[in-house]
Image (tube, rainbow, N blue to C red):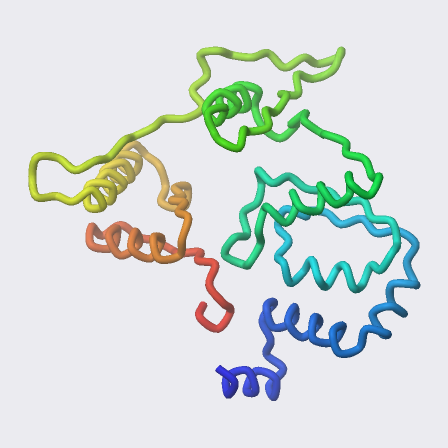
Length: 229
């Protein structure tokens, strides 16, 4: 690992994680430089804080100093677990701000998605613990109202489990994905319009291998390191 790191440094071929670690090393070894940098700024606005890693929290703290900060984020949108992000980092920051006399403002109106989808998500995730923060659908303004269509289909669920044969639960799930994709293609869908999401890189690779066995073309977008890709 050390030899690989030296080779990257010699060639100037660094990944995002390398830049984070080097920056953190700089502020740890030269705190005066970080303090000097912090004095150049009066206020900080840090967006997407839910995707912040513990390394980045320490780096931001060193570089922002005692200047007032405005933190924006949504733990329910935290998607960078693979890159070290932790949604509880946002919750700790929120608690820290409130205990120090800061305030919290909630933005719950969602303008990105159809109202039918938001109402479905509010209902589906209401059983989660900790509870899901419901979203308010944007219904337009006085000039143009958005009507809610209760018959609009927003999601279809398939539950794939092992059957009476020797097929395992994992195989049953993969076969269900294959059959559904085959049905989509037979009904006119293009392969580039079909997306399979998974929580881990390994699951994506296994799914691609399984689809390949059925002669279904795939292109894997995995969140692995730059050199792995």
